[in-house]
Image (cartoon, rainbow, N blue to C red; front, side, top):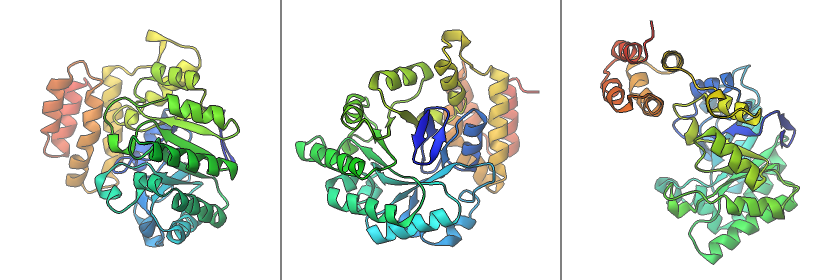
Length: 327
């Protein structure tokens, strides 16, 4: 239903790479709820060139994690190509080039979304990476760096050129880099891109939080798929909900875990994290996921305060069991 090079997925959705989030635990939960393609966290190309990076537990690939993608940031075509070769050699099945990241520290070095301002270099990076690996190569891009005609032209130049060279997929986030995450994502431009490039796999991104809305965006835009990023933080069951909506279910018939089941999912998530990080770090690190989980609880403000106040694993576990009625 979603084809990305030689990777054929049965469902038209994937989990986006999220810096600081998409570790092995988050990937495992996404797969549990039906996501067929996940990504590790975003990597700097210069770091990904070195095999020792992949000794770190979050970048090691489990036998049950295929297909799995990696996304890299960089400005040097040769370094990006070497990074892609290394990623392929350690077992990654897909390489995505990040021309979208809006983080100021990334932009200051000309990486991520800043690459839209240098379309010729972005195109050269793709070509060098394409030559270097035998797996699917994709890009993640925004609809422009700033809301200017020149930036819009750059976006189209990059996408049309890479489409003409048979890129395996283009993921488009419907905001300008300068917007960060402000305002609403524009799904009209990705739809226009698909209409102009019908033979290229186009995946949409941006403001994907509720299953029925996501599938409506997918249908009206006529894109090939969607990439779920922030919408999966603290809500891994969104992938099962997407499957339900695709199967024609609506309203109360769409899977939604009850409070106790949510609690068990949260505890499972933390248990997996505790195997990746030492205890004190795992508690602090988990808070950003907890903020997402709390949004699905009917008494979100109260439990948010209590759970976030947990100072150690025991306090965290007790708070979760109390507020989610887990025995």
